[in-house]
Length: 259
Image (cartoon, rainbow, N blue to C red; front, side, top):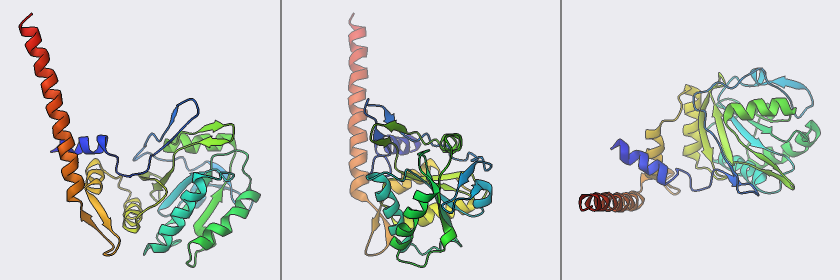
C-alpha cells in the first residue's frame, strides 16, 4: 500500500499547477521543500512603512509566506489575487488565526513600491482586513538569500524579470516550515487545513499528500469527496507500467538463459 501511495505522489503531483517556471536555458526553477526546518528569525527586512523589522518581530501566529517580486506582471499578481480570493472564502479570521507576509526576492523592490501595491490586494479580499495582518516586505540581497535558502525557494534573474516557483509557504508561530501549497488558485478547505497544520506545527505527511490527491473539492457542497475516477485511472496506469516493467525484466532473463 505504501508503494502505491508513493507512486501516486511521484507520478501525479497533488496540485494541477506546475510548481515551477523554466528558465531560458531550460533550467528548472523549483522548490526544495524543507518541511520541519526552522526559518532564521533574525533576518531583517523593510516593511511597507519603511521601517526595519525582523521576522522574529512579525511571526507570532501561523504565517503564510508569499515569495513574489513587485514589478512582476505575470504570475505574482495572479498568485496574490488567488490568495486574496481564498482569504475571502475562508472561514478563518486574518490577524487572529493567521497572517500573511509577501516577501519580495527582488533586491530592487523598495518600501515605497510595497506601500503602493499593498492597498489593492487588501481591497481584493472584500473583507475587513487588519492592516498589520498582511505585510509587504523588501530587503537586501543578503536577507533575501537567507530566507529563500531557508524555505528552499529557487529563482533565477532573467532579462525581463525572474523565473521562479509559484507557491505559498506556511510557517508555525515559531517559524517552522509546515506546508507548501503550489499554484495560483486554492480551495478554502485546503487553505484552512494548511493554516491549522501550521498552528499545530505539524508538517504535512506523504500520507496526507496521497489522501489529498485521491480527493476532489465539491464546490456546491463545499467539501472534499473521494474521486473514484482519478484513483481508478491512476491504478490502471500503475498496473500498466508495472506489467511493462515485468515484461522487460522477464524478457532479459530469457535472453540471458539462452546465451
